[in-house]
Image (cartoon, rainbow, N blue to C red; front, side):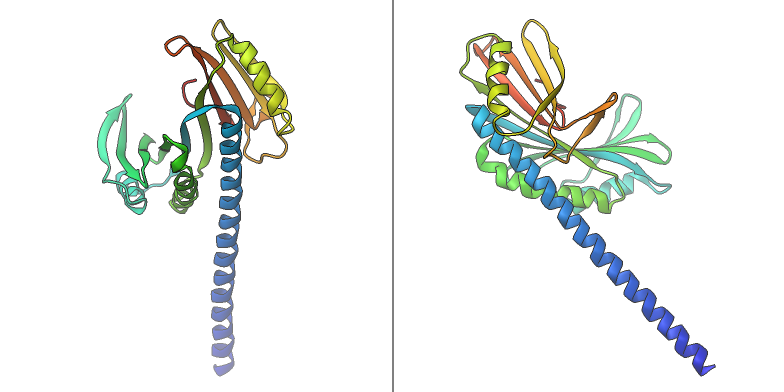
Length: 250
C-alpha cells in the first residue's frame, strides 16, 4: 500500500510539473508571438512615416470566432471587463444579438463588438484607433494586450492594421501609386500580386516574405496592400497602407 501511495504521489507530482512546464511554454510562445506582431506593426509605422506626409489615423482590428455552449453575454461582459472597457450593451444588428462597448485606453479609441452568430458561436471584433503618431507607442502596447486577452478567452483571434494619410500630390492616383511603389521596393521585397483601378482609385496587393502576417486570396497569399484615392474635397491624394490587407474605407 505504501509503495502504491508513493507511486501515486510521484504521478501527481509529475502531472503538476508537466502542467507548469506547459504553462511556461505557452506563456513563452504567446510573448514571442506578441513581439512578432508588434514588430510588424512598427514596420507599418515606419512605412507611414516614409510614404505619407500627414499620417492621420492608424486602425488595428483583432477579430475571430468564439465557440462555447455557455452564456455568450456573460463571456462578452467578462472579456470587456478584462480589457478595462465599459460594460457591454445589448443591441440588435442585422437580426443578430450584439454586445457592444465603446471606450478609450491611453488616448486610443476602442470599439468592442461581440455578435452572436448561432447558439454556440459568436464573432468578435475589437477595433483600436489612434489619430496621431504620438499615440503609436500606446497603440502597439494595446495591440499585444488585447490579442493576448482575446486568445485567453478562447477566441482564435487574428489582427490586421491600416495606416492612412495624405500626400501633396495633385496628380492622378496611378502616378502617386507608381511613386510609392518605387520607394516601397527599396524598403521591402514586395512582389505585386493583385491590382484594382478605377477613375479615382488604385489598389495594389503584395507578397512580402519578410512579413509573417498573411491572408489567403484565391490560390495565393498576401501580406500587404496599398491604395491611393484622389480626394476631391482636399485636392490631394489619400494613401492607405494595410497589413495584411486594408479593412477600412480607402
